[in-house]
Length: 84
Image (cartoon, rainbow, N blue to C red; front, side, top):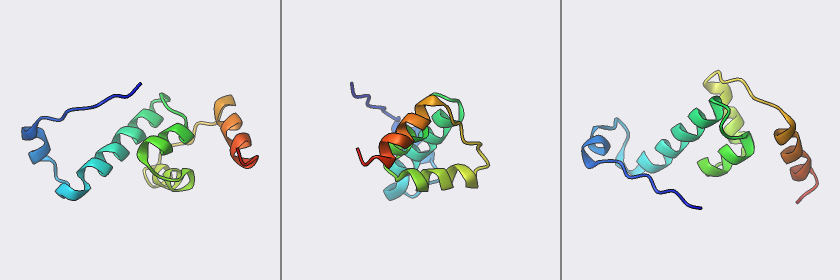
């Protein structure tokens, strides 16, 4: 499944983000919000943001967002540690 989000031109022009950075910054804002609400794990949020997990964790720290750590995150960490 793939989801495409269309942002009206009037809204896009109103963003206080340089045009060349808009897509990446909006993707990051979305993933931070989804993670903060518990809707994505840190691994999937970093994948959606297009960043490495450690960089995404740094972004969360900068924004003072607590890390959620449950069974899913543990499983992801163990998979990552195993090189899979």
